[in-house]
Length: 448
Image 1: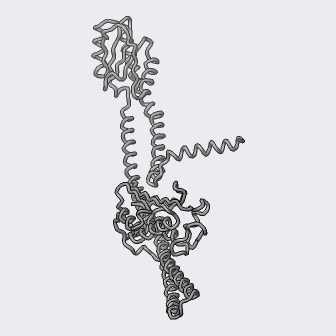
Image 2: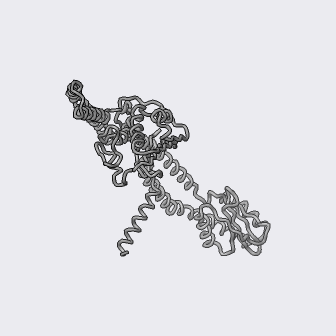
Image 3: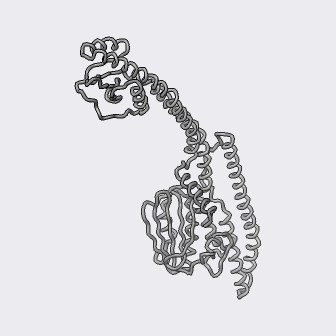
């Protein structure tokens, strides 16, 4: 593999890795687009604040405290006794907010504990090191409101207790507090705004899903941003066009059927008056086939959307379809099988599939089970089956694959096509595959 191809492959893999961590919903992505720049801006502002202003102020305060400590140490060295230390403590306590006493130990501590803000330890260490020539030790974490500084002078250890606000600038915490509060406030406003913008899109998606499954979309009204309203109006116009197309197709085929039935009726009457012969019987059979073809066309063109949905038990429906053929057709049921469907339409679809299997096979097995969101129906038979390359074609109208078994009882190649249309109108799916019995497997799913 060339270097350029390897580079493209690595780049594509990085993109896929990044996409796997990105939010999938519109709400999540919009929130990320709004909140990510805000968070980055506040992080940058906080960084420069602590690096420039807050750290500079803290360093200045630390230098001031270190200078005071150095002055007291030098004054103590002039007369290193307890009386001198007590007078120095009385002098610096009210004016410098410092207190100094002898430490009970004559040795400095060795253990160090770092503060949450390490810059405080760093600035204080630098300040003490630049102002003191003696050994020192300090702790910024032992007391919540004070800092412990110890200096070893002439074999003794002087313990200084300094108020924290003399070394540490409290404005840093205040700044962080308002920074966090501003982030929370902006986040709440952003969430409310995004939810208000995403709600019309969710309604539009729900209406499109209901329309695709043949359900009523209710009183759907386009709302939201101009682009979302435009998409909503386009959806309503598309629905009206599809409805007009279905109505025109149904009206056309119904009219053709009605017009053809009149001459067929005259022909049947004429043949009934003729003497019985082979030619007369053949003509009667042709007329009978033509009537069945007209019925098939009407079934294919009929709009089932006017039928109301109702809660139906698939188990009862299938047992009614199988009827007296239960010895030839075996059925197994798993779970609760109640589903909201157009009963007549689904019964027609299942009848077409089961009758197609029964016509070309000696044995048919039906397995029905309930999933989380769908009911799954598997119909297996031991017939001659359909080649894999032709399984999609048999779902198209007016396709007959002789000697395959797309021929329904009407004989015009519409049985599986009608079943597929009805199942898709309910939001389901019909798949054809090879059966373990050697024939055809019809696997269909229907949403609950």
